[in-house]
Image (tube, rainbow, N blue to C red):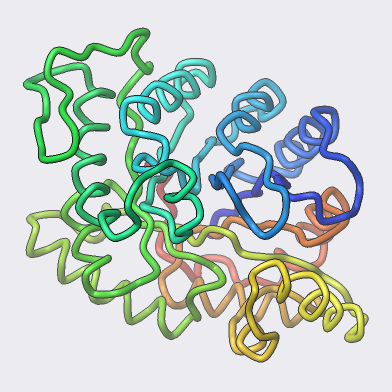
Length: 318
């Protein structure tokens, strides 16, 4: 199992978001040997949301040798040419360390803000991934579809190498077919799955990959936005669910309790991470709900040693 750390793009502790805090977080994650540094993408959210790709670019120097990942970027909302431009810059400035996680996004508000029909998101997303590949590779014929065309476009400077494109899906059959058809990897969502659902989705994805002529064993996966809070205080764990996460996601706390989020005592967190590893998850990307630096350290010190080694498929970065 590999672990990544999400940049804390939401002001969950009640203080202003500062570059110094983000770089300190990235530096600490690298020192603790987290393997990935991640940034999510929204235009609008229930709480103020710092622009993810900008924050990721601003912390590249502090990220050491970690793989950096968008989890996920929104090529339909931003536009495929604009998204390719920012991904190429991050890959180039990071020395070729980027995994380009992309998805259509689930927020109708983001689409309204961008002036794009939410009902068109799936057709547009399929085309946007093909357009991204054309623009990032800089080779071969351009792509022309109903919504986008890359004919005659050459975005420069190019990335050091075309970054692998991982497709986000919560695990629906249609979504997994899209992952197998378009992606170099799969990103699941930590607050939209469980170990059992993940196992079932991974089995279905393996079937779709074989049908697409791809090797399931060589196809990486990760679980993004795995909200984290390690505490032996059960009241504090409940407070995180009821007062922080439920209003943040606009979901009933009962629905969140049914998930396998690592929120609570170290032993419970390790049990839940282990269940994902046994289900075939290769990496999880953690997002602390408070005390971001302290939680990164606490997870490494008290949770990781309790997760059995070798319980997951051998991890691959791309």
